[in-house]
Image 1 (cartoon, one colour):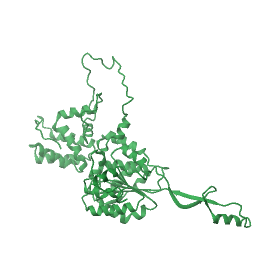
Image 2 (cartoon, one colour):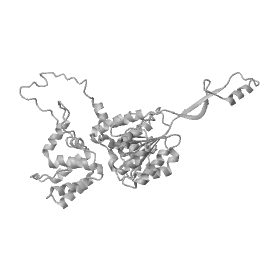
Image 3 (cartoon, one colour):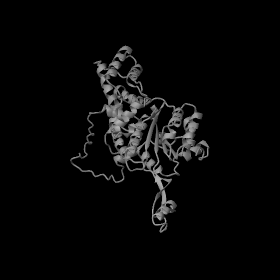
Image 4 (tube, one colour):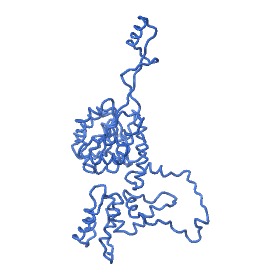
Length: 427
């Protein structure tokens, strides 16, 4: 939240022009702001007055912020633009390349780099002049051994989705499009003809003998066939999951449209306050068109969360259609649900009994001190096979290695010990 330290008002009093420039910075940072909202903000400030800084903050907040995930971006840009000029200098220093003996004294918080990038768009970012007496860049060549430093791609792999700038988000989407989610085939009870198969085929042997006058010259053989499972994705699109769910759906789109990685079919559902089937939208080859169509279909994007009710709708209407033949279910949610914990536990148990593996991806696992204190997490955790993080590209890459390992439980064992429960409960 922005602080309200008093600053002198500008002498020219061009508040309308400043509000318009402030709105442009918000739009560059990702807020959906058009000319209509700018006009409304100017009229609102004109009606509310400019006497108290706190009133001015909340007046602009009411006009420009329409989703919970935009609050942090608005607060940072407001502080940069209206409140603290020195803070803008600090954010500019974060965006300039520099050499330090250790890492940065303070990492940029969520939305800070995105806010600074929006305000500094087009602004010069010149490096400071070397101190007097030191050689300039044209006089001395400095060679730096970067053999033990991390590359930009390596840093981006481990960066939290919420901490990424707009350029980093675009690059992360390109990296997610190259990821795959391979799976091993499942043994089937159906058999196929094979001359070296382990099982004899009596019917085929007799048919061949009838063509030779009843003489059996060799035994026909057969072996079991294999089949590919379905992948079912249940993605939380509530306000607390907005940034993570968008990038997770980019990953799901890449899996759904990649040939040769094994899945028979990929089914995708979103849920917030209601369940929405977006499977047909993900069939579009263009990821932007696919997610735009999915966003238009899911009317509860960035809204509330009713996990238990949405799972009840899935188990009632869709489980028999998409969970047959050993399907694997990926549930992407933070588990923060305020509905009836008893219903949530029952629906999770029913879902788990209908699947071959149920894997829960939770971005809250990015915190080292994460503990299952929320009632929704406590109700869901016993009924999953594996509990893993989903806050970065590296965590989604690790999912590809773990999904074929039937013994992988992720962080479930540790958290179940914290709850004082047996790990096999619900399995």
